Image (tube, rainbow over all chains, first blue to last red; front, top):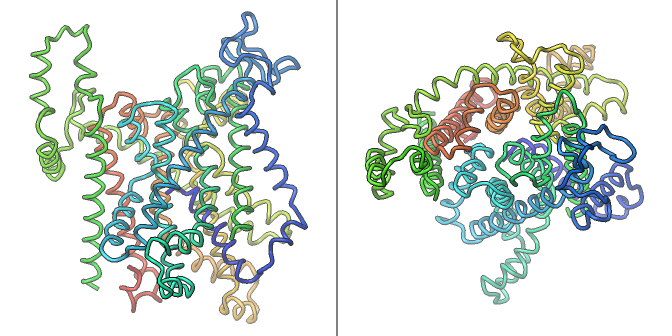
Length: 294
Length: 314
């Protein structure tokens, strides 16, 4: 668990708190769409398009530089300038989106699937198994998340997928905790009692009633986790444990630009701003997603 | 009270043992092992037989559970193993790197607390709604910026553009200015967030209304009545903050080339030095557990309302 999560837990909590008061908040939230939300969605949409079809956005090759065009300042022909090998920085950022975003997706999916399974098992079986599992989750939370990521990186080796797994594992405990508490809450409700009373088997009730009703807030957290994952993956990339060069992963771009910090400011500034924008936008969009879902 | 204390201590010891076991399983199960990486290098000209002897001296080939028992015994007697890469005991390495990190982390935390208090109180004091909104959104901006990038930007702006902080041969305190700011920014965010929420919460309490009704000014109420009540609950996120401090130290020390535990961690991962990394993981879990223990035991002392029902905080 990182502070990132603590902060955004509040968003979910407040969204959940509001649900009790306003039952029909959905039309209201559609009536006055805030500008920030529209801009954030736009940023995310562009980032996803970069990941899906980078060739639509730039005609430069992200991996091969042009001779004689090294370390050009940003101008009309090179929007964000070029690096020491004459590669267009904007092209590298565009082609790098796929690495950063799929990494974040893999990380969130891993945490979501593994964590939720653990939490649902703990919450529905209860007693000894529940105690044992939740103790283990406590232990996972006591290891600082970066330390856990680094241990897993040592175990698996460097690489894009391994970095994504390492980031995903750090969120398993969090998903497990949340989904367990949701399952416990749903299990106490009358309709679950009724389903059991009308002869539903354990597995059927779990699948048809408990799971769908406990998943909304878990999905809201998953959306929030996305921004955090982009941040963590760029950190691992920067430290050199992610994709190997010359992959244009965003964290790695910043690490490479560091060597030219006194002469070519754009090499570190531009990719960093992109990461900040994407993370901010992901948080903004997923917060409103959390509100609507809750 | 003593029953509660024992229970809490038992819990702490369990978490510590489990963290040790998890890190052992993760780090000893690794396929590439540090001994082979270091000694299989053909330039060293070691015969396979010599490598086998070296492996035997590190007990690298005995059964995993034997290694586990041996390692846990060694940790209990204060022997944290031997760094294969550096060729010195892990304990010595840690002791050599600890002071730099302690200095960075404590200064960074102090600055973060200052940032947070300023953000929270300015946000509560400001009369303009738009300014309040702007200040309150600062923490969520801070948390969205990669820590390593903050460091690089600070170097770029203050060292290379404005030439305020020297990069080459800075003094012992000068070299800490930018790292401390870098570390403080992400850590101030959750603190400020919790403070802002606590202040909002405390402001709605009846005793605030009573104090105001008696004629106290807004500032006086905020200082005398709200501050105390709002600062206390921030202790609950101490454990989370510690994790962030560790992560921040690794990144900050790497960016600024400081020779502390953080930089050591980075190098240990790079050279797959499992012994060093395991010691660091176990130590950070220990620190986390101790911090949470202290917070739990300190709460009833600091908050008189909890003294009668100390067990309820468990």
